Image (tube, rainbow, N blue to C red):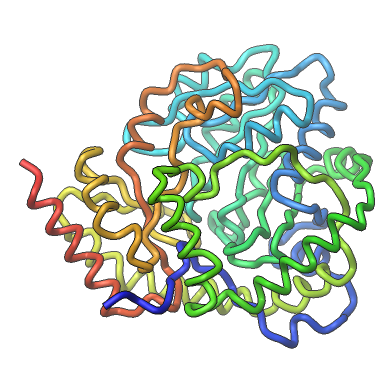
Length: 399
């Protein structure tokens, strides 16, 4: 029997009707307190946050124009670098993972490097200290891409506060969402001043559109509403073989750049109060389910290292080879169970981005073998167990 409900691919914080009531716009202040930062800057998206950060850093170091990104990350990062008027450059990932290969990073950074962008992907925490050492030797800034890691920490400190700048996403399906939004933080007063000098224009057309989309998100972000809003378009894209469109990797015509309006700011101000308890519940679910996933032969589940305390929007898996991953996705992707892929390609393989310098074989291998399983509170134990059994079956089917 076909499911009548749809599990989202990530564990996003559902909105309540009280969140939608008009209230003072205090999201940046409350986010700064949550992150342990002196200040936070609210932006219209995570991509816009990156544009602002890069423009500010380029004003501080105008002779530097290259931005080094990992070979496997969100393609919008490359778009944002170009929107900032700078040059993206790729560095390969470590074998079997998504963090920078340190040796490759040392060889990639030079006197033209403005910034290096380590990515806390899937709520996991990467080693920013090593990256900061390498970037510092080249005179470059470190911008932490924490778009998927709001609430993750290293010891007692939030991610985003170890480098020179950190940015977070408040997009649909994230831990906290105003449909589209972003946050910028920095431990450096001079960088905060430079970012504050970057103007964000007021665009009534875009703010009305985002407000309508946020109302739709509030109404439909539940298992029944997501069947029509997310699941049916996903299955149509997969039926056409459009994998990039299925996961939302397709490039927009441009990156909207505008201030967030008072009402959406207030919605986030209300919802952020529930975020710590929501993240704690997600951590509890993940800890309970990780042993089951890790017991499956040929499946590697990414987790935290010593002193790292990530968030769990979903489980990020690496399978033994591409054929096994594809078998698993063929069996699970259209079933409404919260199984998906993160980014379809390595960064070098999105035609819409154009050519980007850098050889990234490890990133391509990771894109070919990775998949995700939702950690949504709506994914019940019976459904989770059925996913695990499919993974066991496809692993046994491979020689």
